[in-house]
Image 1 (cartoon, rainbow, N blue to C red):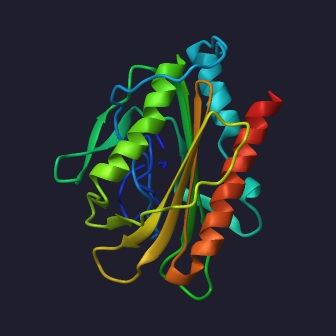
Image 2 (cartoon, one colour; image 1 turned 135 degrees about the horizontal axis):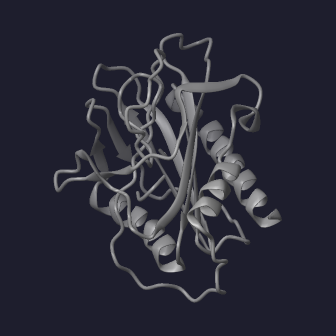
Length: 249
């Protein structure tokens, strides 16, 4: 998925392999449930849309940072991950064998921001629920549309993805696509995470919305397979909040 979990590196140090990768960013000490990573864009047909606003890189970056969610936005009990927020200079991509690799940012991107949070779980002292939000601002609608379409392509091409630490994400077909009438595009993906060291599987959901040139992605995962309903709800609420903020600007 281009520019989402959302989303950082694959180390077990409090980071989600989701979206933009921080360069030399510090990591924490608490393992978190990981999320799927983004990939570079591929050409696709651009939908008709109204002319998006023209933004300088500084304006685009400020917009992205204003939309990504803080722990307080997620709710009671949420805290910052070890690597909490960053813009980054690279993306996650997937090789032919669906293993994670790092690539430069797409040239259409003018601003981006990622924030990553975690939620302590009394039943799972060694694994935390985790969430992240990624906002990517493109210079044109084509680039934003290609990001969302590429998420579809990666899901189809790599139903199982392997991250650099050996964690695997296995897609569950037929994910419910929540209605967001104000969004130009909506794409939901869900599945199960299988850590290399055992444990799990852990359910995850990634929900991506596009409005004009802005792509917003929310990710959440919890350390118990029976908590998928909660994971869906939290992810949808996070995406809704980001979209509402954008619409109010």
